[in-house]
Image: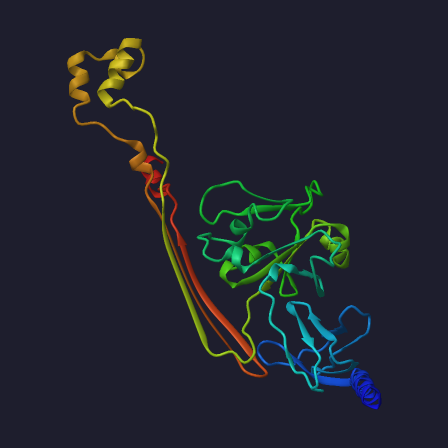
Length: 341
């Protein structure tokens, strides 16, 4: 009997020890990004509870939590991290950048996510612009953003385009949206001449709540552009891209007359030059006179696009430098019209 009672006391003692170890303890550490830099303002919550804290300016945090509980680390632009608390009192967390950059929405002076944003904002990233043989950013944006209408009155390379967002809002005034590049308002000409390979993301603000911060300047909508920049603690990186293409007219699926057939046709109708010529004169006149005017006025156009970028960064500075060359020849040979004027 005494042996059974002693065994019962042993089990009870072990249970009490386990309860003791389950009591709260203080856990601390540092939260950094994937490059080792401290992240301030990271939300740290005990999973399935409302208890939590935030990292300070240096990325340090401290929280009371029981062993076996899970801490959830979340930050805008980074994937959530979960850590199960064990016997250690120190947990240093490295947050991984979220590759889905289109989930981050830029609205004026702040950023948020699509899930939390109640505004009519559409964001497209550099993946949309890269590897596209377009002369301007506008051509890459066509068909990518609902409600954004981009039209051109000419098919000539480099021709200006009209940007209309949310419809035409004025009869005599400017109908184009406000353009913001890296926080600075610019005119439409600077926007059109921007190299698409220098763009990181484009956010288009459509409704009144999104554009209210800009006042009446945002009445026609706002286009916010963020350009690429170097990363801190980044090695010197070179990136080069080249594109070369051809542009041709579609084949004309028609059988055309030569000069003799045309004169014979005019003679049969008793109209035009052929009506006054005999068969011998038609043969003599059309012997070596056959011009295919499409070959005379049109050609195979070429597109040459070259881009070079250099980026680097240290602990306190970052740098991004780029140079681009773009040349596009149209299919119409306008210079040959001078001989007819």
